[in-house]
Length: 54
Image (cartoon, rainbow, N blue to C red; front, side):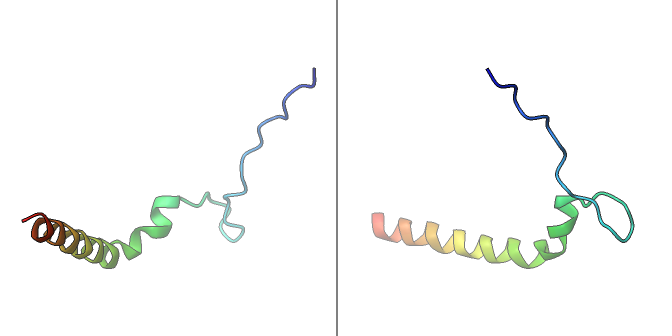
């Protein structure tokens, strides 16, 4: 049997600063825009379902 390949960490290091890039911090700046939009779409879908079922 062949041995599994050794686990190597992904390249998530900023070459300029040498620090790891945090996935949450990289998308957190769009949260104030995305959350209200998703909430509005969700409310529209729930209202549509409620009207359709009535």
